Length: 239
Image (spheres, helix red, strand yellow):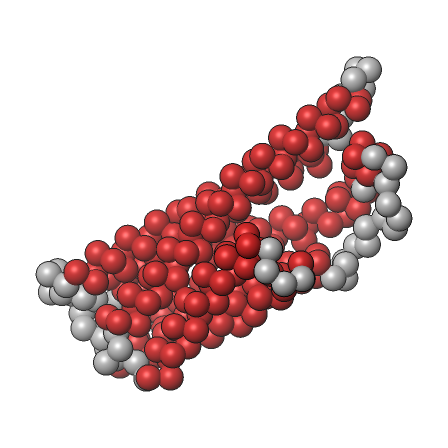
């Protein structure tokens, strides 16, 4: 059990770190550069950016896939951590439910984003005389799909924050006080990363850089440290 927790924790941390690094590569245009200048309209903008979207697709795909697999591992980690607690402990249900559902929602959201983008990469438009209509429809369909996906991810992120707090409470005697503080800071950062963009607080870049700090630093540090702290010390095994 200790080895399972350690490997799941490391998997979550490393995959979040990789996903965030690739997201930065995309956001900072380190791999491909979008076309310069403002397009005349929505259709021309989509047509003009097709080459860029094809070029950046591998980075986009790997970034979202890393986050998706990380959420799957988070579900497993939640059940593994819950199994260490006594069957009558209410926190066992809290950890399994929050982290388990968080992983499912997050993974589903990431897969929807990948699928919605892939459809626009495979077929730019049908050469049947309705180019403008098809492109506008494609853009709106992608926006709707991604909007639904982002709310699934937001739900997964908030549940992850609840799960982290539950873990900090359940294992506070098995880990250092510093790790518990990191857990609480991570939970607050996760919730802030959802609230700030929705409330349009601060500049637009604030949401991006907050996500980078939380998903690329706080989450990996907390979850990897948790795996190292629990496994060697032999937290309570299930009855």
